[in-house]
Structures are given as structure tokens and as C-alpha cells.
Amino acid sequence: MSENATHNIPLEETRQGEVLNLLEATNGNGNKLLYLESYGCQMNFSDSEVVASILSEHGFKTTREIDKADLVLVNTCSIRDNAEQRVRNRLTEFKQYKRKNPSMVVGILGCMAERLKKNLLEEEKLVDLVAGPDAYRDLPHLIDEVGTGQKAVNVLLSREETYADVSPIRLDQGGISAFVTIMRGCDNMCSFCVVPFTRGRERSRDPKSIVQECKTLFEQGYREVTLLGQNVDSYRWNLSSKGEIKNENEPTVNFAELMAMVANVSPMLRVRFSTSHPKDMTDEVLHTIAAYDNLCKYIHLPVQSGNSEVLTRMNRGYDRATYLDRIKAIRNIIPGCAISTDIITGFCGETADEHEDTLSLMREVQFDYAYMFKYSERPKTLAERKFEDDVPNEVKTERIQEIITLQTQHSLYWNQQQIGQVQEILVEGPSKKSEAQFCGRNTRNAMVVFDRGSVQKGDYVKVQITDCNSATLFGTLIS
Ligand code: SAH
Ligand code: SF4
Ligand code: F3S
Image (tube, rainbow, N blue to C red; front, top):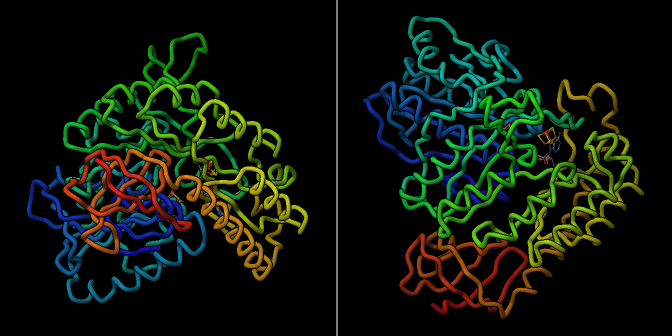
């Protein structure tokens, strides 16, 4: 995992839920300085861009130098305990800056703010302000409140807020790839998951504002958008009531239709999305992906476990057979589509045989990539109330090692399959290791490294794949 990543961090790093994302200095409409750090998923990074936008209207410019900041905000994640620990350590580090600059205001945003509410003010004495994910429009007012010597909290969750009319300030100005939030919250109640408590009820955003945002991004030079939601397959917008679905017979826009609308912005704009849910992903969505070249041939379909009883305890709403049926549909409808997944190991009551089922499902599907986690019990979740977190940590560690070893073989297998192919790559910029080499992704979301030649970031180029390891493809530029 990398620290000080730029905004455009690879998906595998953002999903960990613990990654630090620092913004670049941007212009705002004033002279007060905001330092904003983000942890967690892409959704949080996208929210930070909304926050930067709201505050730029109220006199804040962003800075990367914390010791110069008037306002320090940390956008936090609660998905696993280690994600929260990391933020707590960071808050302790802030003490030295606050000692030097007592008028500096420190605020907590995001999922930890929502989960811990005003306890954060009491526990962590240096926090002045707490704002949950639906309260960002209130930030200017909360900052004023702190200015009058009070501690300020707003953790109200909303059924409507989508920040549809706020145009996010992109934290990697001049970038190639941007996140676009299409819905907020989650109505599923996976028993391990804290998100429904920290993000509230599911609501979709007006498709017009989504398409407009994508058009603007394209005009600014962006060449890739990732549409974000906790369960994109349940995206739905009622065209007559402008939002909530009250009458099933009224005309709506579903996720497949939304993707087609975004794909039509320009054939030169690549479209990705995250996250699909196995219980809701329709064939219509798959046919739409197959129909448009610029809808990337890559689906992230979290399985969590390969055992149906564990899936029932997780309250995921599908069993092993249903999951495998969705994989079959992807392979039939979109030949050559890459598939990645999320796996939780050591969930409550997971037996050795149940763990074995996860390994056998992995062998059956052969995922291109997987994000693999040890189960971490979260307060207030169904699992915390109903089950015991009874798989010892050593066993979780052993199981995750087995899972990682197997996944590495599968990732290598898929990369080897691509050697010899000529692929279209969207150039992202210099590779991590050398300025002489450039990197970019293919439609399957695999990173490809090649000698720079005369290409520029944002170009589409043809690269012949010549070599690989389990994480990266290497190739030669042919146009
Ligand atoms: N909405 C997405 C997941 C968002 S959270 C979906 O339904 O797939 C990202 C991943 O974190 C989850 O897929 C899961 O694998 C992992 N995760 C969530 N809660 C967890 C917990 N309590 N312990 C360990 N991993 C967890
Ligand atoms: Fe959490 Fe499940 Fe919602 Fe994903 S679908 S955010 S795992 S409750
Ligand atoms: Fe973390 Fe909240 Fe995202 S808990 S993973 S930041 S939705």
C-alpha cells in the first residue's frame, strides 16, 4: 500500500480502506488555507472533492502544507478496525501542529465521524468539528460555530442529499481519470458491514447531472470516469417524480440505461463503475457493456465467501450457485471480460470446510484480481449482535495467506494469457519506477508499462504485450 498517493490511485489500493490521499494545491476564492486528508474508498475521495468545492465558495484554498493550514480536515473510514486505528494515530500526530498554531481548526469527516458522532469530541480532545457524509453543505456554518468558541457537530443523515448540483474541485488537476458518484448510502444489510450505519439510506442521483459532470470532465481533458455507488446495479431514477420510485409504472432510468447515456458522451471517454452486486447485476447491464467499446471490460463482483451457509450468515442475498451463474453470464455475454472480487476470511463460525469452499470457488472462477480481508467485527452490525467473532486471529492469518497465494497464481495466469496481444492503453503518465517508462491501463484494468516514446498522458496508444509478472504487464509501443 502506498502513502502520499495522488488522487488517481489504483483501485487495488483504494479498496483497502486505509489509504491516505492527499490533495494537490488548488485555487479557491479566498485566502484561508485548507489541508484535507482522505482515507477509505473511492467514495470518500469523491466526497473530498465535493468538500473542497463547498469550502472554496467560502474563502478556502487547499494546501499540502499542514503547518500553514487554518483548517485541517480528515475524511475517515470505519470499514475495519485498522482503518480507524490509523486515523486515531494521525489525530495524535496533529497535536504538535495545534500546539504551534492554536487557532488551527481540526475537523473529522466521513464514516468515522458518523459512527462515533460527538464521542469524537470527548475522546480526542483536539477535534473541534465533526461532520457526517450528508452534512458537508453545513461545513461553512460549522466552521463559524467553532470560530465563536463552540464545538460543532452535524451527523444528520439524509434521504435526499446527493450533492448533485455541487461541481467537485478535482484534487488532481489536469488528471486523466475521475470518480463520479452516482448514488449514496446502502439499503443492504450485509451482517458484517458498517456502511449502512455510516452512509444511511440508498438514493440515486439525477442522471442529467451525472451526464453533465462527465461531459465537463471530458471537455477538461479527462478520458476516464468511474461511476461510484455501493451497489450500482440498484441505481434507479424516476423521471416524473425526479427521484424516489413511488409508482412502479412510471418511467425510470436504470443502471444499464445510465451507463449507455454516459458512454454516449464520447467514444473517447472510457467508463468504469464500482461496485456491482451479485444479487442485482442484470443481463441487461452485461449486454450494455458488450455493446459499447468505451464501457470497460472489467467487472468487480465481490463474492465475500464461496460457501452458501457463510453467505447466509453474511446476509448477502445470494448463494454459491447464484454467484457462479452470474460469472457464467459475464463470460457468455462479454467474452474476455476481466473479473475481480472481494473476499472476507474468518467470518463468524467459518469452518475449515467452509474456508475450503472459498478456495474451490476461486479455482472455479479464476479471478483476475482480488481484495482480500480478514474479518473485523464492527460495532452495531448484525454480525456483532448475532454471532461470535470466534475464528482466532492466527487462523484468519493462515487462511488469508492461502487465499493470497492462490490469487497470485490466478493473477499471473491471466497476465500470461495476454502476452503477444496488441492492446489499446489509455496513457496515465510516467511509471512508478522510471520517467523513461510510461504506464496506463487496458480495458481489463490491468496496468501496462512500456517505453515512453513520444506519447503524452491522456493518449490512447497501441501496445504489444511482451512480458508480465502477477501485478503488471510489460509491452512495446507500436503506434
Ligand atoms: N458495497 C460493496 C462493498 C463496500 S466495502 C459491496 O457490497 O461489495 C468493501 C469491502 O470491504 C467489502 O466487499 C468486504 O469485502 C470488505 N469488508 C466490509 N466489511 C468488512 C469487515 N467488517 N471486515 C472485513 N472486511 C470487510
Ligand atoms: Fe456493505 Fe453490503 Fe452495502 Fe456493500 S452491499 S456497502 S457490503 S451493506
Ligand atoms: Fe470506508 Fe465509509 Fe468507504 S466505511 S470503505 S469510507 S463508505
